[in-house]
Image (tube, rainbow, N blue to C red; front, side, top):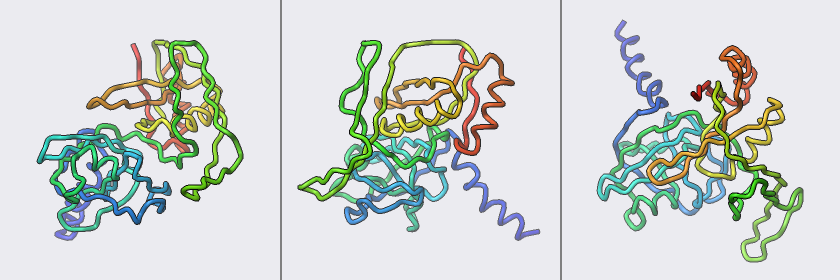
Length: 250
């Protein structure tokens, strides 16, 4: 009986840490430069340029707001790794996140973590974020050289890219939508949009939000004429987009 109670109390933090609104305070540390390019627990390679972090239990793809309690500076990061496994530390952050938090030169800071979105989709990024953003024109072609590897003479890093054709239109349609994921980095969005359109036969749309002065992109499929139709789509999507859920726009 006592063992069951102890196990239950041990599991409670793991079950609740993925919920939106979950808050935790503790120490944060910075990824060492030697880890650049290493594969994280999610399968994605670590890059100091990306706004990512590690946590022992928050689901991969979740977005968290990290606040430095010493200077009140904050940043939004995506969980893509497990750790740190050091007493008192609750997260490891990439160098870009550490810069926003004012941690560079200190190494460790007292922080507060808050889960702001837990519906992210774990994907290995395939393309770099486009330099040119779509403007007011109705159609914009975003192209990257496809199926070709280039040698970077300075860094020795090879890159590959794909072509994406993007048609941009503002729209607000009422109905039921299936939210596939939330992203902070635009590089992930294009792959999801292409895969989703192929799977559902519908053109996905993006909801753009601003959280703590940073952009957040939510990928939606719809609208569906009824919740029942949205539920059917959700069942078909669960295998690939774990944690997807239905939203209603009125």
